[in-house]
Length: 295
Image (cartoon, rainbow, N blue to C red; front, side, top):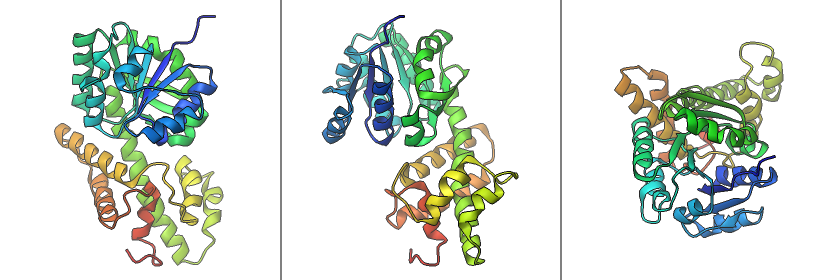
């Protein structure tokens, strides 16, 4: 049996902690970095070796994963001072799990290949930290066939589905489709729960009652109980939802594809964040519809 590749991980937030814990559990040697030293220490508790920069992560690894907040952060990790491209990464592979601008993902892949001889796969994910920890993420990938083949065994350990959609940037297009379906659904679930509670029925029965019908969904089952309990501990931040919805609208505008529902949902999250709730979970959009809340 061939030896497992050494893994590097840049970005040790909620997703990074869950992903690295999963990778260590699967027997990988993992080196990690985050701009927040406390997050590096937290990852060390489950077996991640800390590094001082993205370049140091890349030097110690065969495959480098990135999971950071936005497109600018990805660019800094790749090409900034002490970035991945500053290390000898020829023949290695970089997997960007972040959600980024489509055209930038394409440009980053070309630049990294030309500058460093390294493949870059844009591979945004869906499922959140619980799926990352369980190894059941949905991963949407864009990149060259050889790079996809290089990372496929690793992806089998972290994802329930790993789908190659085409060349660089294709994974990000698929992620925008995912976000249309998921992020609008948060607002729909909030509206449904507010109506159920206003009508005086036991809302806790809704997920099981509706599961066999067309209303049944993964989100209904997972999120409705949390919303009923007003458990807004973040599995993903409301501010990130708005960032992604703005990206959906930018892509849709460039493609001349209308997204009226996503535009309305973005407005709701803009209001939510203006009220100071950006660090809460995405499901906290319920606050805008909850008569018990004075938002």
